[in-house]
Length: 245
Image 1 (tube, rainbow, N blue to C red):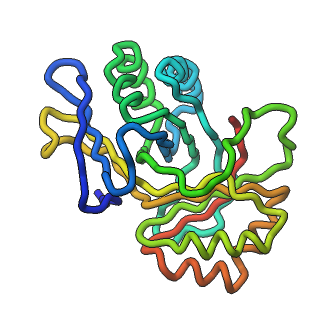
Image 2 (image 1 turned 90 degrees about the vertical axis):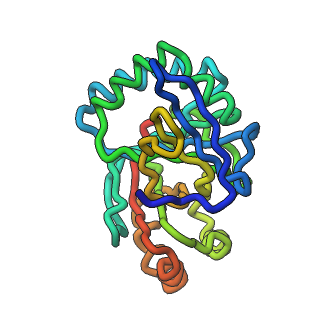
């Protein structure tokens, strides 16, 4: 499994049923244990109906520890995918801290509900990000958000020159940067941290953009400035998503 973390790793655990534990591997140089984190859930679905039921149940546990769904969107069109990073669904959940997240993992009801997620998804990848941009949180999905709005997601492995992307977006008033994050934590389960089953985290970072239509992003990725950004990452994915939350 690709490891997106660096060298300054701290490990924290949460109790699971029996002798199992959940382990959070945190890059201390990127992410503090007591600061806001955004969990990236990036996956395909085996059963959308079961997953929707899981979401309906799980969100209660999320909110109980102070968390909140940040954005959920479904893939409509792939723009770039040179190394099979494509996934059908992106869900980002905001937590007050990793401490709050561990408290949720130890909740018996959440542990039972999570069995539904395992049955409902495939190619599941997960990681904690620290927010890099200074944007405001996305508002809840309601009538105030134009239905024609399009979400573009850029995921990458390795190095990505985010500062160049920000400067490029400054030239495009019709595109908003909604979220930018770098993976700072991963998770695994088992009896010991050094022999646990790590949940795959195939990305190093993410950018979420918003525009009024698909052609804005289709034109953007063809520009020389954007093409130069694709030369640095080991892998890169870009896709257009329909926001459903």
